[in-house]
Image (cartoon, rainbow, N blue to C red; front, side, top):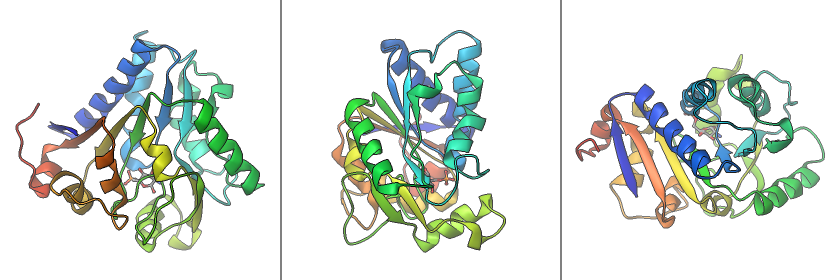
Length: 247
Ligand code: GLP
């Protein structure tokens, strides 16, 4: 596992974007696995900036997202489709046909089959990944078992509480989601994990300072992948007790 300690959240986002840009420069038809959530939000402006500076074009790039809430229409302000359009897709030259965010609002069985089929065909060169405060990845929540492939997931209480900040009230947070499974996440060629904030210290501690792999802390399964880069700021690294010098 490669670990990059940055001076700030901004630098974390810039570094993660840089790795995605490098993947596109290596393969202009690259497929990007994309993430939503507060942490990932800071990465997209750097991708948009690179597009404006003509460092990169998304013309032939494909993208597939990790997850989507069940019950929100694509144009709902908190749907992950809307998030992606607002924060990224509407600002670059990616073709809408080349972007896939699962739909969580109808024919869920068919949608999951489509999602799984896309993951089989669009091989992700790189996957951007955030971590939940309970160690979830995508919406793979801690539990007795995890799922390898696309499935419907129940959100953990901690996730509902954490994501309530994006909704009018906690009751408005959907309780279920469609998500890539852990196996799907691990099938990406390269995984870039970003984290910031003291709330993530417990999960990052298990990921960085511990050899255990457990379904009780889904991010620990990332230790099974051969090309994972974790990017975190110095403040979080110190909270985690990870003090390797800045790389
Ligand atoms: C959300 C998403 C994840 C995201 C994670 C962290 O619930 N399903 O894909 O990476 O939780 O979110 P945040 O960055 O807002 O803390």
